[in-house]
Image (cartoon, rainbow, N blue to C red; front, side, top):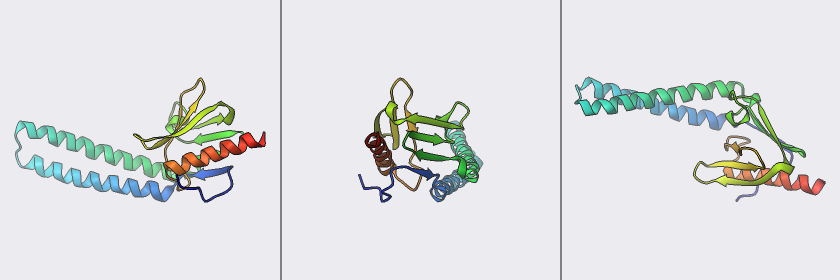
Length: 164
């Protein structure tokens, strides 16, 4: 793990808007390329089996376009999306994991946190909480990758323990 450059353990990590928008643009480019390929394939009078590819490609293109639109909407409300590392605990705001409807905040006191680890398969930070579902934090805050984000969480947790 690389060391987090900010020595302050308690801080607010804002949504990484440039990073989110660059990924969204890549999805939109993929959607456009896929849509062009789907149209060309459909115009070529394909056999029945190729129509499966046409439908799959159209679905992928539509899905990436929807993801692009959601990301644009999310970045317009960037102040509503953050991770707050405080002496009392961690707060994830604005993410699906934060509430039932897909928005809101979920706060977890450090005393209830069992482990903080990087989920290698999904490349997210998983905070195990006693008697609750895990808090899953995507590495899209403060410009930190998954390992740096996990380290920042662990540093705040350690600082909280030392302060008590």
